[in-house]
Length: 335
Image 1 (cartoon, rainbow, N blue to C red):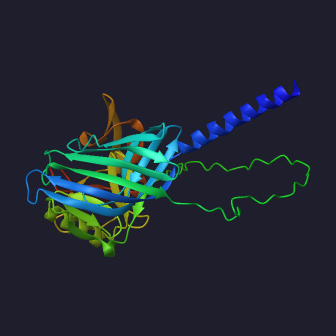
Image 2 (tube, rainbow, N blue to C red; image 1 turned 120 degrees about the vertical axis):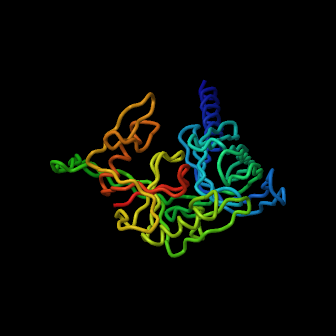
Image 3 (tube, rainbow, N blue to C red; image 1 turned 180 degrees about the vertical axis):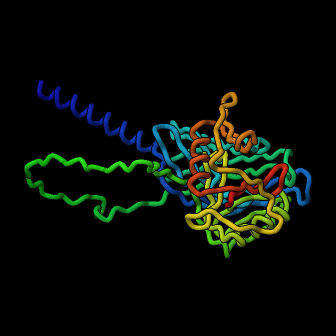
């Protein structure tokens, strides 16, 4: 009987180990060094195809089987391209689609084996916006997860710390004073950069990239708008690019440190508004930000609309400015 019980215990232990190993193999979370190879195909320009051969990064976060994949930039694809998807049976698939920019999309899929990942990305572009050359990017990628070494673990074995019994002490809950009229702190989604290093690069497909030499900040449909964006950034000394609602941002704004840009620049295309007169109105499933009867901006949900309103009031924005209307390639706010 005792021998039978030990056999059962061993089988239970073995199943647990195998289940644990299987579960671990499904864990993609981490940062990867990625090698990308493939081609960028153009339908209406020559040469009709250019090769893509680059090194970049990939960051994956995971919640259960749901994953978020953020690629660094490489030929034909902007940095911080965020895919949403799923993982199972050591395979994954994810998609990027911007509903405000429906003439392009991106899809990735592949396999994972321990710390190794490999897959494929296809990025079709169809006509629909000035400067966007129809075609597609088709690449394969592979790489290894970056190892995170815990200094407290030597040779993979954590040192045993002797347990010293102590008398438990009931934790004291800190008393946080409530200050009347003080608004809650809002988390911001911003990327920092050096305005002195911002430059414009020809993408070779009719579009122009705004970059600081490290990240692909924005892609513009023509050189004129890209150069105007660079001029705006340099003039106002902007060094933060902020978003509301990524990976499909419903609004962007730019800051100088922790303050709103102010002053003016010749040929600024701006519309003045009264921040104290702003309201939100539900229209179907979406939410409209308006200044009195003037329609300013539409949001996909109430949360993003409220967040935008809060930041506009926080920084005291009084003007919405555009580059490239009627289909602006860049929006910024200033006082």
